[in-house]
Image (tube, rainbow over all chains, first blue to last red; front, side, top):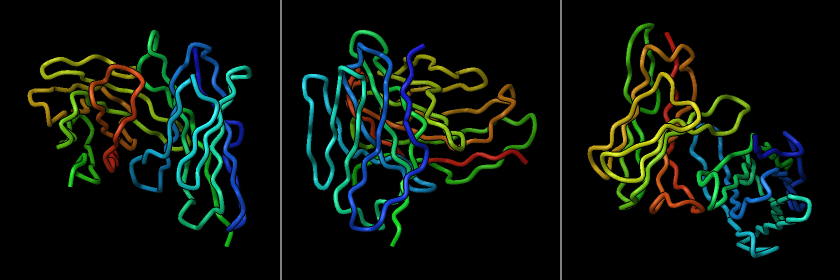
Length: 113
Length: 114
């Protein structure tokens, strides 16, 4: 079946450096992608989303890049702060098949002071 | 303050007991969802509802039941048929559940077996 996966389960980054979290997806029909941040014991918080008609989208300190050719999604966090430590999930959906979001297993980001 | 409220934060179930997790939203969203999260895993969809008095099974509905009598409320019952209920349960809502749209999550309920 279709799945969404992450390349690395854990990532440690020095405070102030940039972080890049990667996500691979296998459903070529996926047309909507979203990133969530989840802190321990809390519900996921929306970070940023992107549709398949775009390659890049920027938010505050975050950028999502979509490469449809290789079915790869990445989340870039600029100038990481201690508050960025969390688990980050990507999820995907397609309007004509599995409309409901399918979530990956998550990457734990740890910021080193 | 608009949002999704889940209660209780922690819940303990005895063997053979049914327990109900509460989820209320004041976002005026049509669609609501229940997800299960196990340690080190992603979110798996249990049930979802796009309109009052209607709901559909997700990927792991066995051992669970839901109701949607009001737009604001979507309680989840974990029945005794669910043999491995220990998990973190997340409720979410979205504007209309029509497909590619972001979900708004509650703060979760941790269910454990005594």
